[in-house]
Length: 198
Image (cartoon, rainbow, N blue to C red; front, side, top):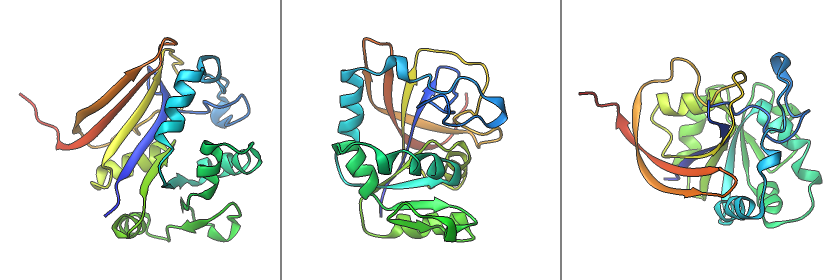
């Protein structure tokens, strides 16, 4: 069985929307696109490349797929871009006939069953990148194994958050953490099960 690793760039207040550029996602009038760019440095870029250096497949929501398909196929060759372009992309979509950037596979009409099916297959780990809706769904159905959070030292106050309202309570165990001079914090957690209270 493959692991599903939830991965995201986010602000200190949990916003994950449009880190890469000003025109990445203007949904709802979001005006802070590209907030990650000023913090990019060699150390954090190398850490990201290392995370993505082993074979992986991708689990993407349709909006993320559409944003990425406009960028990564045209990106200069590098270990990161080559890995992303080569990965099988499993897409949550009602319009699989409109997918073009591959290799890809639609999850089918029942997203949960589709994710269970691909998780049970042999293959590399599956990285979910940048979808608050899918992240919450995975946690609700016990399908996420780990969360890798890259937290940037900014507050935006508005935008799509890492977790949707109503995501079930649960607990995590710390696996590793790495800090960078720019203030970025990379933390990996293992899903530990239901929330325990005192």
